[in-house]
Length: 152
Length: 453
Image (cartoon, rainbow over all chains, first blue to last red; front, side, top):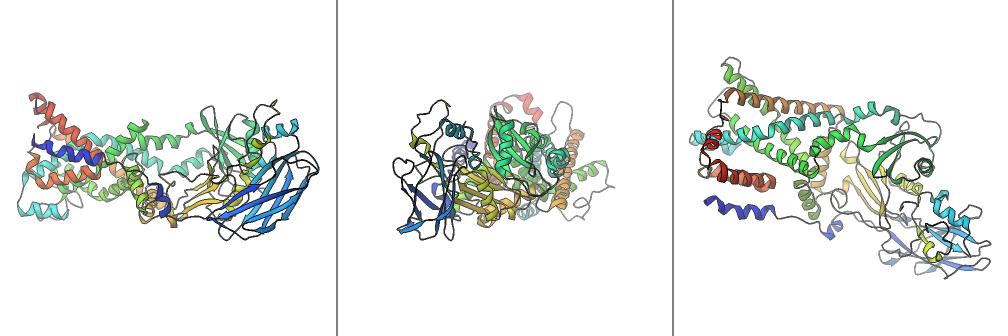
């Protein structure tokens, strides 16, 4: 029975399971992605001037870069093209816009620094939604957004 | 094996030889069948690229004609044909004449839909459960038996290391001897010697290759491999997190405003605030990022399945140096992590090379042939070892070498304990065997005699 003395040691070693550390990622190559927040009025009505602001930060500091906005309607009937935003400083970039018709619109913000490029798409509702708009949403028919249906 | 040599030559210890022979004998009898299975399945799996190229030729091959269509067009086709399918992956195809693949999950099945990227038309559907090479891989990795199977394979792999070490000891010349019987079989020393050489000599030749395949295969295993990978990743010298162990970063860390979609068609009074917000970027944007980031063209896009998920670009091409794992925020398109081979730690690089060499892809055809020779060698050595046993086996007994008291063999005991620690499953199985010996074999005379214990 002398062999039994080895048992606790072996069991101890076997049970020494390792957990992945939360900080492990910091030991490897790190990216420095741009983060964005969009500021809009609470509700948007047609034929009323509004201000759309993108607040950009990177690594907790604000960035000074060229930023463009691209706005189109979900049914592609309206497309405003690329517009350069006004740099208000402190990482705030804005444009003023007036929409002529109700419906679903998409705002795409193009922003880039040396090591990060983002182009998020933000969906807004002008006035009231039509049944058609909802259908587009649900069927994901908008070509630009044909794959938003992942959470069935 | 230098230490073995000095020990055995200093004082000839026939009982140490016997101890090791006994271990080699039992380990061999138990794991040889599994080694044969692993070698055969592995030998076939080596040729996966060629085999799949033949099997799925009609699915793979397309005629290049102008520009490839957008990924979103191809998705539309898939959505039209499989309205209930959930898109999970997209593989654009690495060559001009290669189809693109859209992975969907549908009623619990995962399907690959092959699409002609030039016309965005459907080519064919393959249920991933029907992929014969995946079955072979499952056999090779877990004997088609899930986690228990994975543990058995791991155990076999670890015990194969014991076999190699004990085998080398038995093979090692005990006194000055010519190379025959070591590097070439002896044909003129009688049948017994010839059959022994038929096992020991080829075994020596393949030992290094077999050891290599075991050590490069182990990082895959569920218990040892996961522990090893976690330790390596934690230390900063392994794979970065999410490449093997660990989670990918999450999307929208600072993006609270995410647009939602109402699902009932009649429900018109959804609060606008729910619809407004960032939306998941279309696949085309992700393909753009892939092109910009210069990833190997064989990459696959893994599509996020929930709000926090990321788009992952994953490329594990034949050569380790071309590997890449890129995580992209599903809302902003920002690259959250970009892990290339160059970003792996030293251990990670070694494991990556080990894997591509193990799979026979790193150096292409020559790599496959060398690995195949090792596989055939393992089968041959297993069979010849088995035959050696049959030849010496007396009726009604196993014919195992006599068991000396292992505690007297301090060096050997130490070696076994070290192996038991390095490979916990070996340690665990040793404890099991020891308990079995203590409680059954030593208690029942008939069994004791049969096992020669």
